Length: 370
Length: 175
Image 1: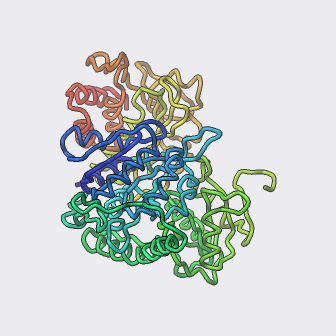
Image 2 (image 1 turned 90 degrees about the vertical axis):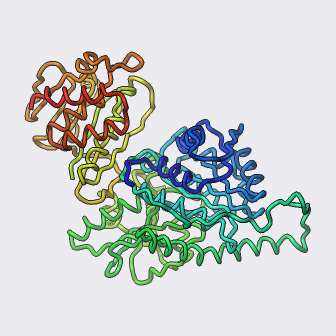
Image 3 (image 1 turned 180 degrees about the horizontal axis):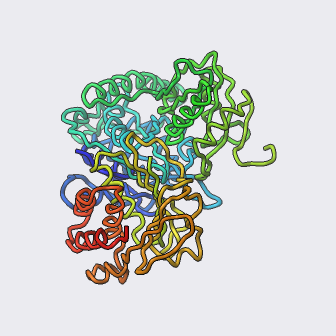
């Protein structure tokens, strides 16, 4: 069944099909229509789910952790400052090994107040132990949300997962979307360490210096095995439903001399820049990074790399470009563009490629050197 | 690719109009995206919505720089906003107005959407509904078929007055 849907609607439709047992959410700004739509599904009796409206995002995540620890499939959604307010509990969710699934609408952080797209909110949660993926179309939002439950809840993973979509440019943009019959694609959730009141045990007790690190190592073990689970899940999705997703989406890369690397909607519009450059005889390609955690292993040798970064680590560099540098030994031309919803067109992206200076950093729209 | 920019004031239904148009285009076998440009949101503030219609999937998310068509739901907005900005050479304008309007070098079509809505008593919270009759007018322009337009409207609104208003606007646009 096809419909015209926003990214927000894409999330809500997938969550409806995943049939979570518990949704906890803080319903006020910067929240989006995602939780409003889910609340409507529940009141229309299309979704049998405990909806917990809480007093803050911190509480929302705490409620999700508690619910998930009982073996309930659990979902929440947030955005920008809401995500930051969850930060402590994000660490807790990953450490407690509860596979909460969350949608995050990527928006800039204040001050100044700005509700437009940027990736800093999600990048700031880099080290929490959450899996993170970024979508670029409404269809991909929906498909990825469906896969998120299966990936996070897999016994080889059991880590929480965040699906990111760009504020406004994806959350509020309407595109055609195919709803699929998921059948048994999302298996029932069974948490091996679920709270069982008949067999009481202690959760989260003091864990001393001789044990604590073992749990951390185990988290990384699971993060590493998630690569395989992600690959299998995406392959199974492609087999069943005909749409293929990978760690990265490649466009015209095979014979490319220069690659545009970006995330989210920029990564999709970059393909149009590639078409434009190819018409001029410049052999460009585009590589859209979908997975941020686990971060893909990339082979980018022998090409110029132009990274468009929608998030910055002050005193260090563009977060995506530094990640690319660290994992592929490339010396990218780092373009900081699109912060706080700054308008960046495919014409601008083509300019970034033409004017590239490998190893340098450029703040789009800033006249003086930064 | 066909690119349309809709000028309206917050609360006049620009978002819904864009959505209906994209939906109708999709029903006609095209790809379409509708994206509102959000600014400081408040009722009455000038806002723009963008619709792209294409034979192939649309990969552009940035704003429309050079629309083929500009729609003006509230003519008073022209005092505050340059509706011609970036409009393609010879690009058309559809304006909600009971009387014709001359704009040099551009074909201007008018239809009294406000009058049609009021005549149908299609008024919500004191404001005439402009988005559903607009879709009828745009169907006459040939962007979508009238059938697809009416189907998109029916899918979103159960009140048949919306259909009636779209049909009247289809007839009345001075093409």
